[in-house]
Image (cartoon, rainbow, N blue to C red; front, side):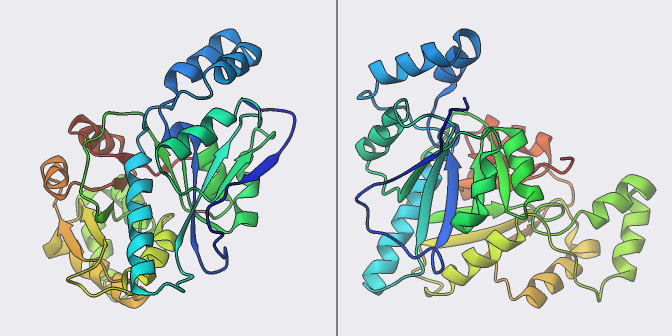
Length: 315
């Protein structure tokens, strides 16, 4: 849905300092359910799509997979400002869209009608809209388009692929679940596992136990989130973070914990599943978003209504 121009629309939401804020960019198909409209664009073309959006611009779009996550982010901002009215280290959300400003009015109206405090709406012309992420100091990019996610990751921005799904309504506390290898951590041990099997991976982990693991694609976002988390006490925090990994705690957990300690990244809860299914635990946690690099884990989470985001490892 590329258009002929690039336009940034500022709403009347209080401006946030991008140098202080934790900036999250979401595409329209990640935050709203636009699957019907997207199919119209694919089958009937841009002109019919634009007409449809203009005719329906006052009709609110339904919530998409990332909607509850953005709502929870907004709740954290409220708690931060209650704590300190002059707080500058807030979440700042940008909607990035390939719509034109004319057809994009429905996006702006929907955000307002749903009570979302969106800072900026960027209607871009280029198919690779990720070129604007760095200029907006984006720390996390969520999109329903795999190419966009891969482009963002290659630009060094934490990014994940959102699938349209039915979502359970979680608590107001922002709950974020990270997988370990190839998400928070590098995929070095996964590569050894693929080449030499489980015994080879265990030997590698034992030999490398004293060495922190490399950085994964979501590490930067996790660090920024952890910094925000430290502003609250353990008991009253509106943020809770989790590590849910297929690693065995006995044989491969020590290096993971040492790596988090080396990074200074405090995780509220860590689960070493030793290959067990993650779905039952995720159902108990009820996160607003679950980051994983395995499609089987993503599918299992989707099946029970957990908002899921794939971190592609083969871009």
